Image (tube, rainbow, N blue to C red; front, side, top):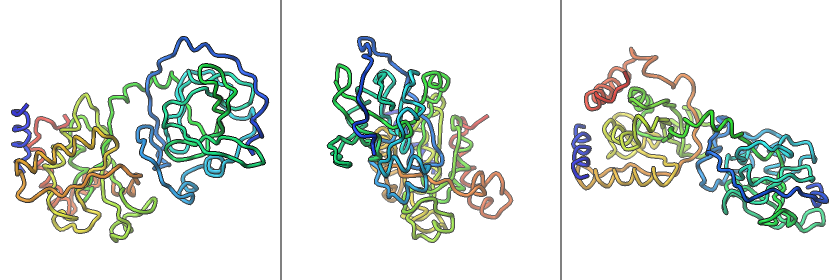
Length: 371
């Protein structure tokens, strides 16, 4: 594989809980046949903390949650309220699919872990994995119970009881409103999304980076925005002040059958200078830092590998200062920042700064341009 590496380097160098939740009777489910459901992911653009793939523990203030959750969900998830029995839309559902935390998108249960109960709330005998649901003692209302919380956001889900069916004997008694449900038919209809991946990159002014990736074959969308700082929904003016710690970034969604994470990184290290700290040309400040926000270990390892290789081969005169940071909530920039180059080609910045970068990209990756 040394030849492949050399080729890549060469290319780069070109540049009340309803008490005990009720007297319980259960209909025992036949567990001898497990249904294997396809994985699926859903999005919630109004909630920047929502993700079906990121399992990083969230540490979000109640004030922030109140901004992004509906009042009813906030009351249950953050204040441990309980919806009335037999009122939730999921309590008696037998539809095949996957259950997620409605507050943060964490995968909690599959439908083959659900059983029919008479308590009036969705009931499960097993959780998706050992980290999906966590517990703490609940001694409220003069009772001793076990509270069930989302393993990612610590949002209240319901309670855990010992009157469930075999093989576990457990009953996860959940609030419907605390769950998002995606039926299997939706999973089948959207299975092509399994071939999509998203990576978030900061390489100076996002106008420049966005304009380049829009031209790469396999890229489905590029959104300019901010991440990596303090505070929700910062404005462009606030980020430019340098006080929020956010970076200007682009969130790139690409088709893995047409391009690769490796190629995404090749473009990244070709079209910006990863050796200047908090600076790209005349754009100076922490908001212009070179940074890769990874969402999983695969992205982290791939980014770390290419940085090590470029430093070892001394492709650049100075060491790379690009930082690798865990993915944080992404905030879309104002509408006028989206597709900025395409909408403002006659502007001096576009002609003098962005256009030369595009020309360099098109020359090096000429066989990889969108038709």
